[in-house]
Image (cartoon, rainbow, N blue to C red):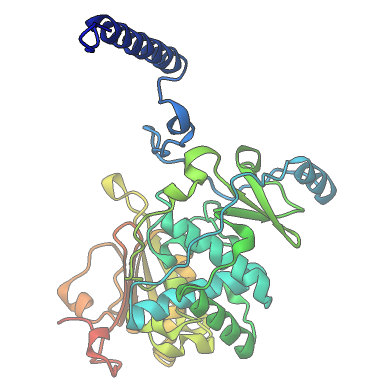
Length: 384
């Protein structure tokens, strides 16, 4: 201190040098931390980064093809697959966006899957329903309830749910059991969830071995059913954000079970009465498509004039089978039924009934000659 009582500049210079030293040390420490963890320092480094979808395409949906093993061997192999509990998350509630007939058709598609896959069991039905809703939300699957349920059903080996292509729909549950399944489906479409299966998109019973089971993660066991999700991003909640359509169209395979599907296809609702079509068809001639029309079969047949007109629908469905494209044309007048692919205007005007299915175009329609068979709904009449 100077004699006059004022402080000299030296101590101030000393303080400034000390602060500079502290600052340089802090910068050095920060540089070391950044070099060891470029993502950040301190608590920021521990924050998880958002999971982004991979650049490649969505995973392939494989058909339900089973390995040729015994039930005993299948159970043993399935038991060896580890149960993954890490990252298990229950699905968010789902609210169906559509109303009116769209919602009722979606309900019946979901109810059919529930009861034909799980029987008259509420817990099993809800597990199946949750998987179907998970699929509808996932980009790898169709974006409607009916689309998910009947995906691949036009092929005998490509269906995702076996009841849609193995003839199981020819069986009938009691009215009470069907109503219970419809109520369970309504609940799932109105926000109900089944948390035990999480975000599973696949399942199978423990006595079979689908070829895809080793490539997925087993995340849940419900009674004798095993539930799976895709590994990586495609099994995380971020992948289940697809908008599900609220416009479920009709499905011909449900026409005999659900009047709402029959009406939308222009089919009579009493198809469900099980009209015997065998008496309604004479000799049928199938003309296979050629060239660009390959796979587009046309069926010409003679119909029994005394048969109920509703039976023509079941005749067409039976003869078309699972073909993705089928054109069916029938005549009750054998003199006017064409003998070749070509037909005159008179023969065309005499056609009694026609049915066309084109799965690729999403089209299906049945029409009658209303001058021969009166229909209550004019939309079922051929145009003249």
